[in-house]
View 1: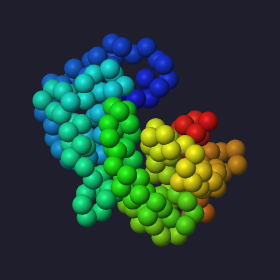
View 2: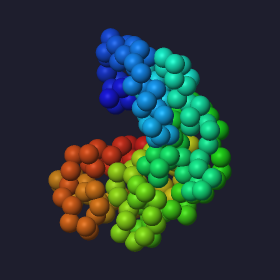
View 3: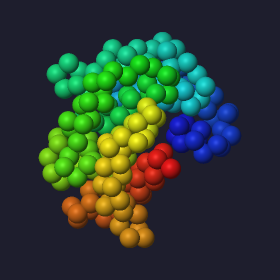
View 4: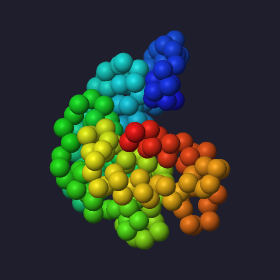
Length: 193
């Protein structure tokens, strides 16, 4: 919510201050951040949007959890492509270093349609619009807007749009358009515009 409010230019300073104070005062922040790098990335993004230090959210250094690097086994930050994209966005938001392998793993986990599945399985039909949209936003934030990864992903996302009703989670899989997928696809469109 903090990231969305900031992006929309809404003056929510009192609410943001209250939210950041709560995050800094509860043990839940530590538990949440330690549950995975994707969760730590969400805290980093919230802190950056609020103008706070992502290295000091109470006793939590959420950024350090991401800077520990991607998994040696999978090459992903976190538990798949969705978490990976959140971590790339967080690193971009703080001007952090992103290893070349973090982009290369996106190339190898891309589906034939040009999108990504949340778990990184590159099988035909496995891609979803939400994960693909988040990857597009991360790549654009890292200066990759003209990359074939982005152009192919945007072509895939266009297939998710269902006439005038919005975007579906997985095009051609029988899923109807839904508000979450529509919002994610629109964010990718805005990022590439």
